[in-house]
Amino acid sequence: MSQPKTSAPKAASETQLIARAQRGDEEAFAALFEMHKRRVYSLCLRMTGNTAEAEDLTQEAFLQLFRKISTFRGESAFSTWLHRLAVNVVLMHLRKKGLQQVSLDDVDTSQDEPVKRDYGDHDRRLLGSVDRISLSRAIAGLPPGYRTVFVLHDVEGYEHNEIAEIMNCSVGNSKSQLHKARMKLRDWLRQNQGLTAPGEPVTSEPAPTER
Amino acid sequence: MSETRHDTSAACVRFELELQAYMEGENRPLVLAHTRECAFCRVVVEDLEGLRAAARALPLEEPTRVVWSNIRAQLAAEGAFAEKASLWNWFNRLDFLRRPVPVAAFAGMVILGCLLTAPRDYPEQDFNSALAAPAVRTAVGSMGFMADSEALERAVRELEEAFRAREGALAPDVKATYENSLLSLDASIRECSDSLQREPGNSMAHEYLLAAYSQKAEVLSSALEFDEGR
Image 1 (cartoon, each protein chain N blue to C red):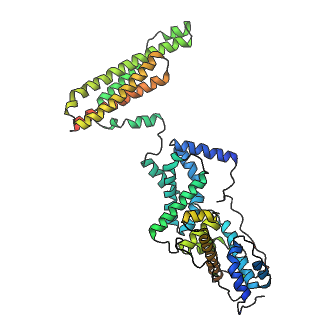
Image 2 (tube, rainbow over the protein chains, first blue to last red):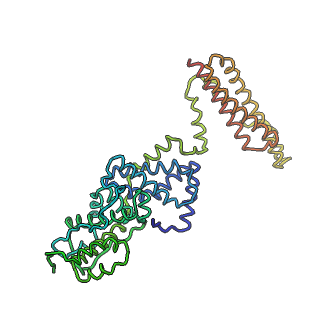
Image 3 (cartoon, chains in turn blue, cyan):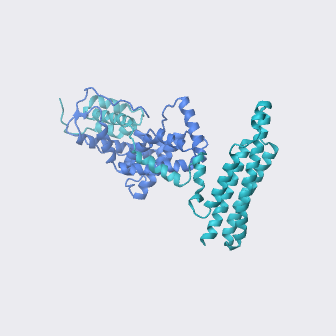
């Protein structure tokens, strides 16, 4: 998983905060929450597509983190540890809800088959920058299995081998699910927003400050 | 300028077969070659690449403040936060002050403490002028403190005697609980007293000793109240 670049002072500061939190310092807990809340909440929101559930899961992820923080020894990056924990919290939640409609545990026998796509009746591409609201809506509308792989890979930056480990599936399966998810998103977006002709300039969203 | 698609060529089918691998970064010359010839398939690649870029650029969302409030409340309920060593927190621990029975005993102890710590007629001014060495002042302060702690000890001893007179009425498990607490506090008092014997100016030992006496008074008062409430 790609890690956000952190400056040495920030890393040192986080290390100190972790040490203080391990001693039960309330301010350190609050500071660690402030540092990571947006990334964890965004992950939960995109994996569930529901703000109330996302807040509950963010809360649960941080509670689990703070309860276990005394066991953190710094072998891995704190953010990696936290995000993996958050992913597990969300997956557990989805499994409890029985929403794993597209199970990645199933053997995918269709990997060699072409993904059916909407050819459309014209050669125009999706409007330059897919606006964030449309994309968020489209992601929320994906079946949970596709959504999970798409969010983990294309949004969060996990590698397929990491997703395979998290989802207990094969790397090939993860790739296949991702491709299907992208094609579904494309179909939905083509049906729900403006199109632009090839060759027209593409404007891109400014890169987020934290990622 | 938009073409309308009527059919899918065999090349388009091959393109689709290799598209997933191409999007995963594998070298697939057929895909590139085909997109140069087929506008429809080129748009598919452009769309997928645009989607991938848009997904990476999605902004982070902000949770509401309720999330931290809930986390904080839950952690506080679980006792995850270390108490800050403030005078207020120390005072708050003396919750027995809210109960009627031991108030008189504790108030008496506080008054006694105030009397003992109030300025006295020690010849300190004389010492300060004539014997200004810090060691001498420390020794004088220690003498004052020893008088305080002895008085506190006497006050606690009186509470303890009251407790001993009534302890027979307590249930064995309740009595054992109080006994354990008192044993632990007595050990702390002994430890602090020993430290002060060796090092009369040890302010930390002084502070701990006072705290231990206060806690012992709290335990004894609680026990007396327990007995009273039966």
